[in-house]
Image 1 (cartoon, helix red, strand yellow):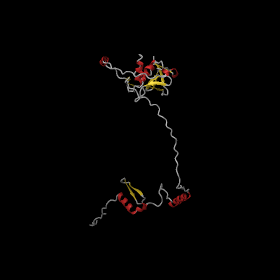
Image 2 (cartoon, one colour; image 1 turned 180 degrees about the horizontal axis):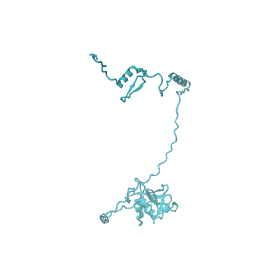
Image 3 (cartoon, rainbow, N blue to C red; image 1 turned 60 degrees about the vertical axis):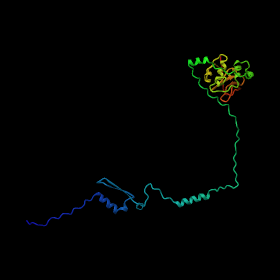
Image 4 (tube, rainbow, N blue to C red; image 1 turned 30 degrees about the horizontal axis):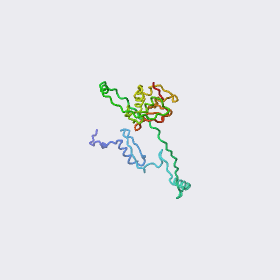
Length: 262
């Protein structure tokens, strides 16, 4: 057997080629053939690379869903044709404008609703009652009786009520120094020995309701928030509201309730 001294030759070591090398080669050599947005998937590594190309590299045909080209020249021609055929509106320089003003009629305000009444004052203590009994407060002398309407002549209630014509309205007042509406009615009836509740809401149930054609002078006349004394015919006597005084006046309520006490 013959021995040789020549050594075996081996292929030189090279850098291994990976999927990324293939990707770089494809990107540089075939750039024009890749779409506007192409995705290359490296299956071995699971890597996804997306490249955006300029509009010049996009394919010539319109992709699905793209808007069609617009013929601006044709649109301009249509617009000019519409303007040419539209009517021309002109207004003479001497044109005048007129405005019709409706006729306005003024109606007087209706009688205002009466002021709400205060709640009755709490009962005084026994010591306060004793001190009041020792030093009673002198009442003001009643004014001369006003002329009683003919329809109410003979009514004791109206005759007593007429003595206080001119007494001012006082919120919460119950004496001839000043009355509110229910303070006036309760004070007048008290002169005849008849006790009425303090508020107009309670006086509404102090007697028997009668119809208007059966009402008599001296009956109470009630509407929500206000009460007076019927004086016959279409009149009443009451303490109306702040700024007014006890007076005879026409019945202004649209649907009052008449109440007979006793």
